[in-house]
Image (cartoon, rainbow, N blue to C red; front, side, top):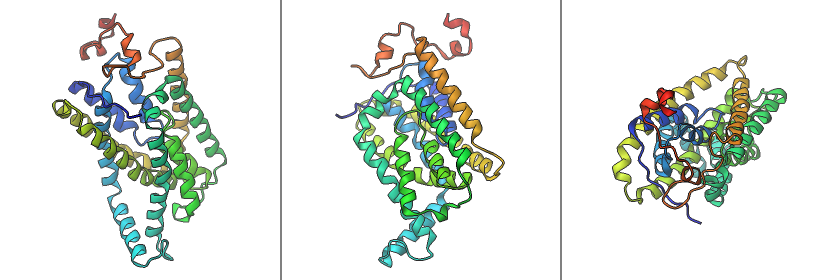
Length: 320
């Protein structure tokens, strides 16, 4: 079943704020999807729409490609050498090996993403599921922290292990799971150091988010009205990209110190998951946002309060 493209108006202020959230959370093990799902609902903003979501993700895509540009170039060169030699993994060529590992590790996500596209964009966005995924994957990351040996570099990975990490990336299609959370956890279970688990996680994410971004962008480009909203969308994308680059650098620098753990992110995930479930249970925000006709959502169709102005957001008494 084809997934409809919704082109909704997003003010520049909302675009900037959503860009900040997207950029700050895209590469941390806390689930950017969960945050982007909740913020508009919590502040009673209208749904930014799938077109905005596709465009705003371009910023983080450019950010991670630029950050790892040297490594990406080395991997492509290594893969080129392996093709010339007609040998998939030339002996001693770590760049070729890791380049192919990233390529093969991306396959599970591509297959799962195409098969589950409609459910991922709609049914899986239920807040109870999002909150549960945040908590469950947080607890699994805690186990990885406890039992992972963390004594292997990513150059020590085997093909089968890279595919295992790739399969874990496919579980991140469930909002709340977090792509980096799933892959870093898998890497730590396989004995990688935290830094190398994060490095391989980020490198593995590049083809995944790039292919997903191009796929969504191709659909959005055909949607009527997108040109009118594009300037606002691109502002959010630029903000997301700049912040994502900063976060990537800070996060990897943080993990270089072995005394630094992922426990702050674990506690944050569990607390956020519990908060989302409580917000949904007490009807502070609606648990489901499955689209109905007109590009809105079931949640929005029953809301009687209009989206507040930006002044009202920062002056809560105006929301009364």
